[in-house]
Image (cartoon, rainbow, N blue to C red; front, side, top):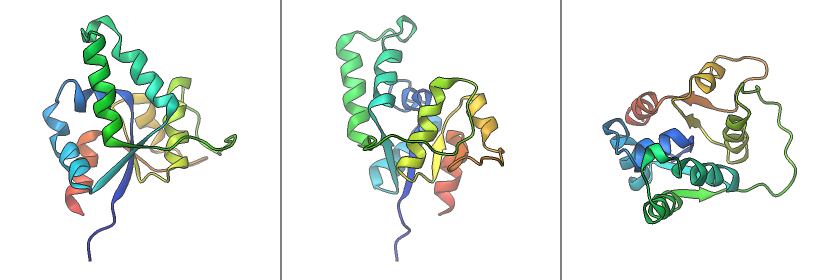
Length: 148
């Protein structure tokens, strides 16, 4: 019997590592997504952040490159927008912009949230309220996927 597909939320930096920078640490992650071992989710709020961040001058992406990046990401994810107001008992991120990833993780029943954000990674050990899923670096997520 095949292992059940894992579910994940990728924060914006991981998306950029995966699709813009082609970070070698994300190769196994990309393979897991393409092979169907990992299903990734996004929503309107996370897509809006990616659009905003992809316009930063330090990324040196023109309009066409930004559109290509967004399209590539949309092909890799399942959109999971909220149907109703959401009020989940979640740990609070110091950076309010990161809270949306925790909310999305609950909504889509994610097994893991992939990030390199130190504040999000610190939440991984919170007990009250606990995070909705494992909060992992890309390397740790790839190790978890390989062990399945």
